[in-house]
Image (cartoon, rainbow, N blue to C red; front, side, top):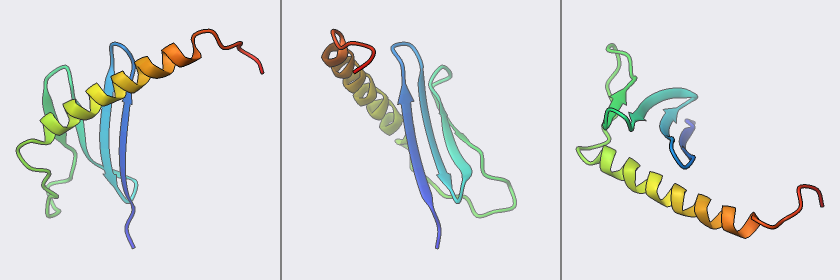
Length: 82
């Protein structure tokens, strides 16, 4: 049994996209350099994410920022303690 984990995180200015298999990074996305970084060692058969992996990560980043904006607006007037 294997564990596949997909993580997306964002702020208003930063973004993170990471895909791992069995707690080992497979790819990460460098949004500044606009590229996918393959972190798999050379001695394994590489998992391929296709030519559009960066575009998929960008769409996820945009969705993350939209959700962040919605959440910030919804929580704007909420007290810090309930």
